[in-house]
Image (cartoon, rainbow, N blue to C red; front, side, top):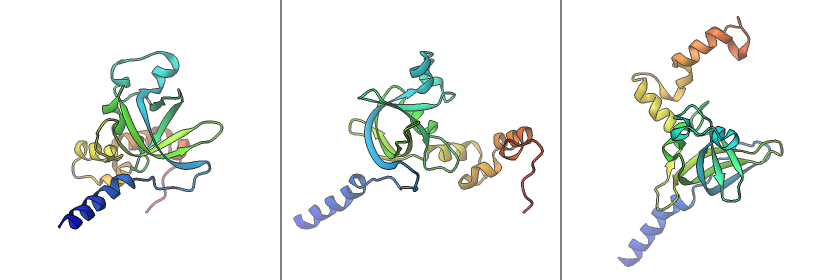
Length: 171
C-alpha cells in the first residue's frame, strides 16, 4: 500500500515539475522558468505609476532580481496578450513558465503558466479567453477575434492589415 501511495504522489507531482513551455520554433527562443515581480512597463520606464499597474491599460512585464525588465507579450490564447493573467499579480512576485525570446534587439517573454511565488498553484496562462467568454456569452471563445466587437470596429476604421478599404476574403 505504501508503494502505491508513493507511486501516486510521484505521478501527481510530475505534471507540476514538468511544466515546460511549448516551443514555437522562434529564433532565439528557449523554455524558461523564473521568479520575478509583475510590473507596468510604462511605470518602470517613465516613472508614471498609476495604481494597479494601469488597470489593464498598460503593457505588463516581469522585473527579475538581476534588474532585467522583460516585456510579456503573449499567453496561450490566440492573438491575446497576458494582461488578464498578470494584472491580479500587479506588484507581486510570481513564478513564470514560458518561452523567453532572447532577441539581441529586445527580449520578450511568452507566458504559458504562472503561480504566486510562495506556495502558489500553477495555472495556465489563458485568463483572457476565460474573461472574454464571461463578457461575451454564447460566442466562441476559441476564435474570439472573429466575433469581438472591438476587433470589428478597428477593422472598419483601419482596414485589414491596417490598409484602409482592404476587405477580408469572402468565405
